Each structure stands twice: as structure tokens, then as C-alpha cells.
Image (cartoon, rainbow, N blue to C red):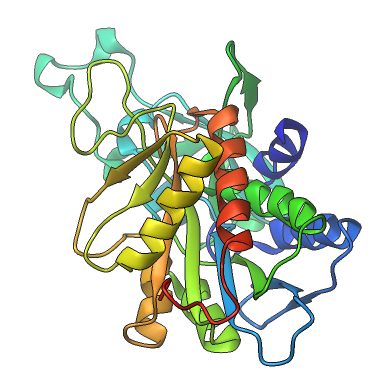
Length: 343
């Protein structure tokens, strides 16, 4: 899993610019022995048939886009104004290395005044309206290669930590995309009584549009989103920070309780540690899009806890992600052809 995840993490792929992730996903799914197709939203589909006509259909999604910035304008001396279009943590922007995706990939630095030149009242989080990307080049060069709306992403990094943990950009949600690849491999070796459609979706970070489109396309009987969620970290714990060593299952009001129970039964069978949570009346994932595409469609969410979400050092315990794959596979294997008792 680690090698596959690193390949996905090292790709820059913000909302509406997911083509490179889509291509790698198609390649890896094809190597696993499945045919794929892509729709006009950029979603990539891999259909796994149980061989029975009219079988119930389960859709499992993972979004391919990452939190990113965009070019908003330029100063007369060549600095690039930036704008956040998908929830980047502004507090960590000063001092970051970024890449501006213009006519070519342009390295840049987001810098601020050094501490000995700032006034006492200015030593707090700097608003994004006062942050600029510095390419080191003059204005005429910059404006010749960069236009308003071009994506700006963190410089890609992937670090292997101790104890089976890794850190890097865009684990939200390349981790889940990687999990779909691993799940596809496992499903080759098992017998199912339902059809499964794996979908690598687009534009989740700006509204879940790819997930909505996929649900309209597939028309699943049941939809599951695989995503990341906020993990406990030093100095922070409580209802909004979930255990770092457990697969997380949403138990909010929009989640179908029978599906959640089936997941809990599968987890108990495999002795997988799980944590239940509720953050909102919705799931705050693209599972909501599947629910909205057909009001009341049964949905569920499997989340992997990640520290430092929407920062360039998102951190995960890979063993938890591997357990998440095992859990989803066991859940699917236990589904009856009729889905009776599950939806």
C-alpha cells in the first residue's frame, strides 16, 4: 500500500484538475484485471460483476482532488496573489514551498516579513489576502506564464515515519483512492452476491459534484464513501478528534443504521477496532451527494483518521487504512443478494 500511496501523493491534482490521478487510477485498476470507463466529470469507474443479471449494485467512492490554492492576481513587482478554493489551512501557509501550475510548473515560496521587522500587534495568523507567492522572477515573465485561476499546490512530499506511519500532502484523499486499488485486488479473490462499482471521483473539495454525478450514473442501491477524518493529536482530543488507531464509522442521522450495523458485525468478525462518530446532520463527505441524487438512498461512510488535515504534512497509520480495506471487503462478502436486512 505504501508504494502505491506515494505514487498518488506525488501527483498535484486539485479540484477540476484531477486528470493525472484519474490516469494512474485507471492504469492500476486495469493492471488488477478490471475494465474502466471515465465520464465527462472525470470520474473513473471500475465495475465488478457478481455474474447475476439484475444484481443489487453497491457504489464505493473515493475522491481524487486535494485542497489547493489558485492564482487570484499579480502585483506590479511580480508577486502572485493567491486564493483558497478548497479549504487549505491558512495558518501553515507562510514559509511553504508551492508549485504554480501555469504553462509550466513554477516553484514558488509563500513568504512573510521576518519576525524582527514585524510590529508587536502583527504577530498573529496572517490573512490570506496578505500572502503572496514569490517565484523569483519579474512581473512580465510571471504574467507570461501564469494566468488567473491557475492552480497552486503544496510542493509534494512523502515521508516515512516510525511505527508504520507516513506523512505527506493530499492524504485527503489519495489514501482512500489507494484503498480502492487495494480493495479491487482483494475482490478478485472472493465471491460476491452483489455487483460493486468502484469510483474515483472529482471535485469533492468544492462541493461533492463528482460524487453526485457518479450516483446519477450508477444509480446504486447502496452507496459508501471512503474518506479521511480528523484524528486526535497532541493537545487535542474529544468529540471532533477520533482515535488514531481505529477505523471510523459515521453514525450521524443521514447514515443508514442497518448498514452501520453490518459494518460493525464485519469488524467484530475480523477483530478490527472501530470508532463511531457524529459531526453533523450530514456526513460532510460525498456520501451526502449520493443521498441527494436520490433522496433517501442508503449511504454509509468509512473514514480513516488522519492528523493535520488540509496541511502539507497529513499523517496516517497505514495499518489502520489496511484494516479499512479488510473491513469493506468483509462487509461486501456478507451482503445477501437481496440486501434484505441491510437497507
